[in-house]
Image (cartoon, rainbow, N blue to C red; front, side, top):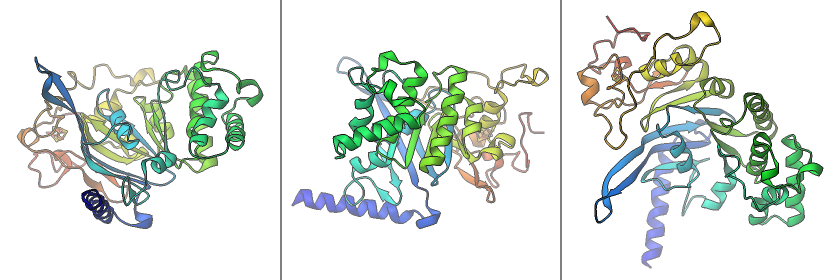
Length: 366
Ligand code: SF4
């Protein structure tokens, strides 16, 4: 009885959460609302929790059907943790993940269905594959677990091998150690597509590849997106690659979203000082246009004890008292493009002295 009541309560919670989101066409295929994950740090004689790493702290965003959302930020900013939370490889402390209008759990979709709709490709192509399974078994395994017959699953594996540019006759009997890094990542992509997902999370999926192979895999991903009508969440530290792949870009700093908007808008007119610094650090092919001094000073602060107010204030050249005392919220600053920024400097009424500056640059406000 108690269990029944708990299920009803959870179901009511999911319905309440779903009702907070806009409906139908307005709603993203994936909606993330106020997601939090703090990892405990244990220590002392009794190995008790002595602190928490605030890896993801109040992250919210939507991913529209058919788009590629790029996620960028320095190492440790929380982008990969966000991906793992989306896949439920780790459980969130709080917050909601809604997929096509449904939460995951009683009253929504099951974890199994969610994993069928959303798949992930990791950076380490070798560690992602079982060394004891042939390539055919690797790709066919997921569909078979989900109830597809062995024959159909093996046919699907062969078709997908051809789709990712590998000759099935040459590759189905091979093992992961017999392949190059680029070939292994193609296998990982084929395996991710084997369940016919709608969303694929690519977590630094091309970062470990040689540049020439990286370009081939990126083009393959573009083609597959078109062919299968996929939606991508593309995580990378390489801003050139994110620019090439993404429709919109989300910038994270120390567990929080600081800016999100259409890729051209963000790259041509970034409004958050951290985004500006990140983009000015991009290596340029133009020798006359190379940065002479590092755009960001100092290391990112410790996520166990992040700075008060705006977490970027310890490195921001425009920081003022309001930045140290109040957490800036993510607000729309351009309704037409849908650009959102979490910075007091661009939000009217925040109390920041530069709030009237329309186009902030990396030079200090007068
Ligand atoms: Fe800099 Fe203040 Fe904006 Fe944070 S809120 S980025 S410290 S100006």
